[in-house]
Image 1 (cartoon, helix red, strand yellow):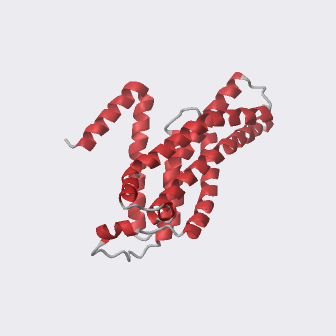
Image 2 (cartoon, rainbow, N blue to C red):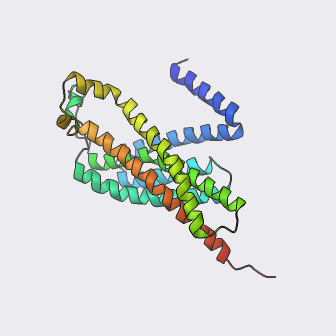
Image 3 (cartoon, rainbow, N blue to C red):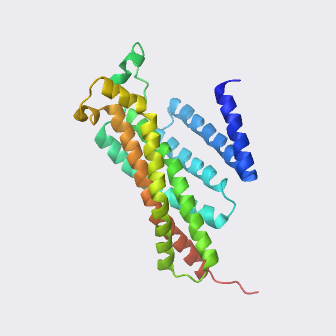
Length: 257
């Protein structure tokens, strides 16, 4: 048995022991998301428009992550709507930033690995870069949206007569509590994943300017900053979506027989 299979079994057992049925559903959602990611790669390889693949895969992954992670429809529907709004905003922002930064493709550090290979694959590296950045932000968006939505749902159940401004304020307060830990999680994930690259930079005595003009570093830095921004946008948008859905329920006329 390989180490990957062994770690997967350990993860499954741990999730079931800690989370019970919900832990099993979370593990299943992880497998489904992996399958859709692999399917997205296959579609791009067959020259399906990357932006179409990005949108459909992003919506699918958000739906699986959110609806398989919680049973309360008030929480999940609010989180899903908020995540879709944030996703649409980020796609537009990523298109602009990626075109402006021109960080797509390979850097000089990849030259040895690519020697003898053709990089003329017939697919826009800019669009592939946009797809990669969008997919990398989905987890942070879904996590933040679920945390805010679950907190607001609990506030509504405890204080059903709370005013909408106070509800938004409560959502912002919950957001302030989770933003710090979420951003630190993203930052240390980025730093740990690129520790070998930083050692490379130090060993070759890269200057500060060379590091910030390195294509690989900039591409990953853009990815992490977009994820930061996605989390920040999720907090107020989720609060506003909850208020909007609450108002719609209150204003809905009661049918009389």
